Length: 413
Image (cartoon, rainbow, N blue to C red; front, side):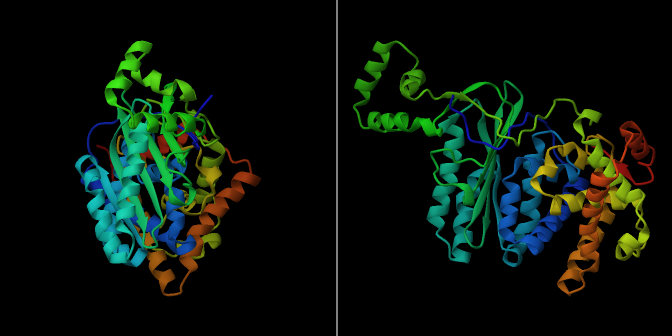
């Protein structure tokens, strides 16, 4: 049966409302710092690779304090990156274009301006942006209408796209991921991933088996319209079915191994989290000997709770793709704006930002000790997880966070 070639799908419940300024500003800073660290460690194209991974993207949003399961992660994360990265685009080599609603329609103008600055082919970039949107809105007819389009561009001309469609009747969203390094054709299985609720059979003109139907449509476009309409009426079938009978184009989204299913419940439940991995993070933060993190431990005021957040931030930077199949776990870094699994601890969030910023700045001067310690947080948690069978009382962990929420300036919307 035909299917969209994707690396996973997820149910993303639609959330209304806006991200409050106290969180949006922190997301901008933390998201920029994580991106800068990725560029420093792996190069700018690695950012495109990460953004094109739906599981990493969801985990990235969760570690920044957004609702771990909702469609709002897409808008808020991309807006945070646009605010944080674009003023430093010349330095970091990456630009964020587009956005939600009217801002998505500004993408062509933004691309032309950047192309002029970086000596790129602006017309080709604009054509690419429009093609990507047309494919996901028209060639893949899955009941979701696009309302957001972000085009992420490096100064060398490589790109990624993150765009999202809405099905208002179902109160669901679907996110589509593209990356230029993986696109061989715009019209035949181009996606890195399609993320959304599997609603059954859809019309998919990008399927590899659709070549005959695409050719038929092209031939029909050259015919006299009156003749085409007359033949459709004579057949007595809906136009869409008449056009696409030849290619058997009504398929389903297929699970390719990167699947996440986001539930409608807001709270983070025990079954949403890989407890062994969470146990490794908590053990690394609360049980490790100070000498393992000497440079970090010398930071005034640094305590185990900040180490917990930094361990999860470290995993977002250094973790392999297999580490992101439970995005809910990353909400244990800085909570969630809706209070799940616990209120956003502003003191901890600000400490994470300060320490990550300091490590990056010192690395630029050749002092990499603190940066290496942040990396070691992830490797230590991974070692504990793999060798020590850490146990965690899930409910007790959340209770502990909520009991200390006032001490850490916990805040919700």
